[in-house]
Length: 144
Image 1 (spheres, rainbow, N blue to C red):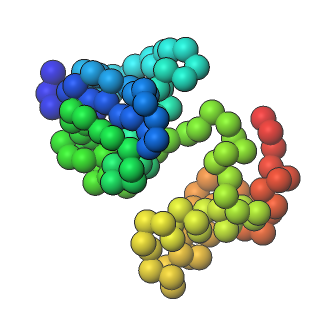
Image 2: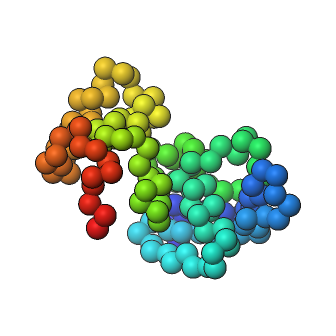
């Protein structure tokens, strides 16, 4: 296998204030184009692993990490622009009350200059064929 897209060696994570590890001693290599089924009981650390791979967790936030976890040859945080994480609870993914604001939220968090945000929001909505406009309330989006 060429250099893996995701690589973990003895990786583990314990949430702040918890005595047990969410994930521990994980060794993993996922290659480009490879599909992987992540299967486990509720509470076994699947979401913890995926949020770390997506670069959504700052290891300096009080939790405890061990081993190494890399994405695209670097840290998960460095690869955030090229990764994504789709949560299993759709309501947990919406932050703002209007669709355009929700798209803008992601751009703001990536440090996009203020003057560039709304043109990029409109372009993104156009790209996916969004027909409702940026003011569509997120609580009026289809549930399926």
